[in-house]
Length: 209
Image (cartoon, rainbow, N blue to C red; front, side, top):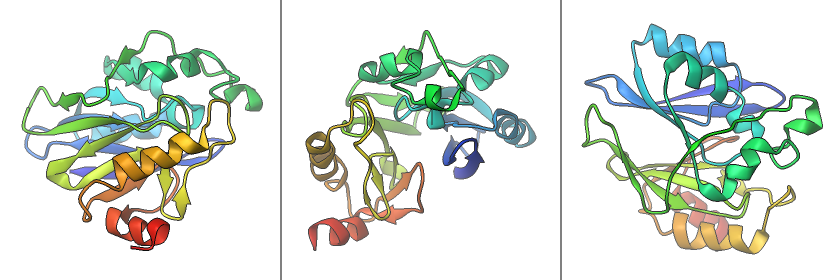
């Protein structure tokens, strides 16, 4: 089961829940704001969150992490290249808005890593390192569900932004072409700030095929 929740801080952002229907265990992906709203959803649905997974280190994707990590007693994970974003308010952009969001002591994920639910190991996400929006941006791919959580690497209207610190247009384009558009055509791409779109639809938009 995949649930989307739009949360609003400085920006609106899509937070996702990846939940096993049978056990109720799962992951939270990119809890960007409104921590009490996210927590209430977890409690009211009797979900058992095992991990918080981050696609990258910008504050609009991490703003609710500290609250949820403490309340749910779960770790949070990020790709090592974005570790510095969690503790640098210039890099994570929170300092621009007087929020100063700092998240020390994350756990780390690796490119190609399989992240399985402890409660039901048949449900898993594969980590794809997709740099460009930030150096450590990742996509979480769920092949059994035909879904990929792409963060801000890609939107329904095209590539993500690269005008923030650490952004790199060439790397972003390579990530999209080599890592995301090579996924099966029916794969639904779930982004941080737009509606879902399939790989096939994105190919037609970006590559004309």
